[in-house]
Image (cartoon, rainbow, N blue to C red; front, top):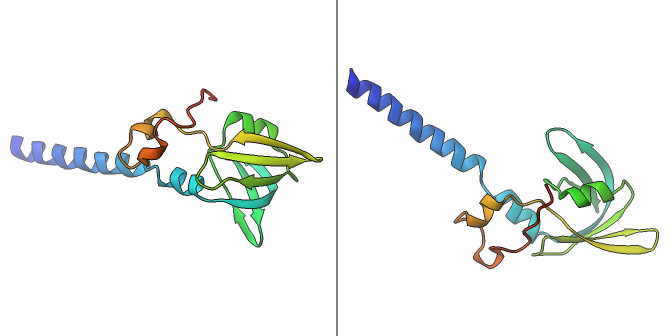
Length: 128
């Protein structure tokens, strides 16, 4: 009986570990940071996270989680230029150009083995 209990407990721990590992996958951040684009903000909303929708040609992008400062500043209609391989964007509004940090990156991602080595320690902010 104890062997079955230990077996079930071991399986539960393994499944929980796999779920945790996949849920904390930094690839969404990595892909968003690597991407560069020029577009226009067409929507701004909150579901469980704060989102914007950016129209780039005929494609709609939804980057998240945005930094608090970017979320508070950006409005629908702003033009946005995402700098490739950097966590910054330029916003254009009424002839003004403002450089802002793009995504909020939790500190845990910096120590994740899947996080690019050249990005370790970059863009650390206390924005949340």
